[in-house]
Image (cartoon, rainbow, N blue to C red; front, side, top):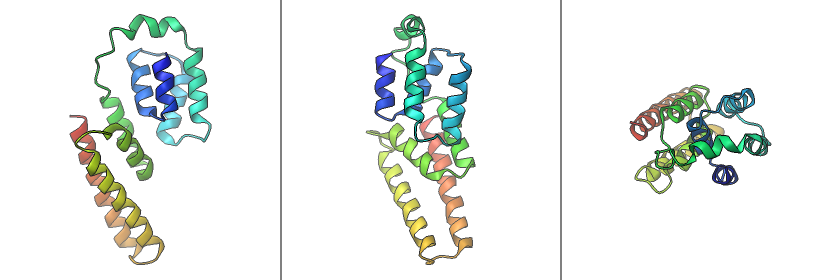
Length: 155
């Protein structure tokens, strides 16, 4: 249980959900928090998630802790959640989650470049350097690049 609390404290929420999914948590509050994360979490989300984890039965953690230690935290559930964020036009949040997932991997630089591309696009649009139509085209290209990267990471 402590390692899941540590993940929350490190703001590695995707990894928290991966770990809890491995445990087969069937809790309505858990399902609600997971959906909230996908659709845009409130400021107090990490604290509420921490309370939920602390309230879960310790037996839940102990019975499956040993069998799940060597599992890779890149799953189709994470890929689906990232794709859903993109579908909801939450590019910034998608990039942040990808940065956490790709930390210290070959894809870390790709995410850094895509994040810079996103910030530059936002700045150009805000300052009126590019028209809204061109900004939309650039956003579509960025989304396409991110979808391809998500597929590559989770294949």
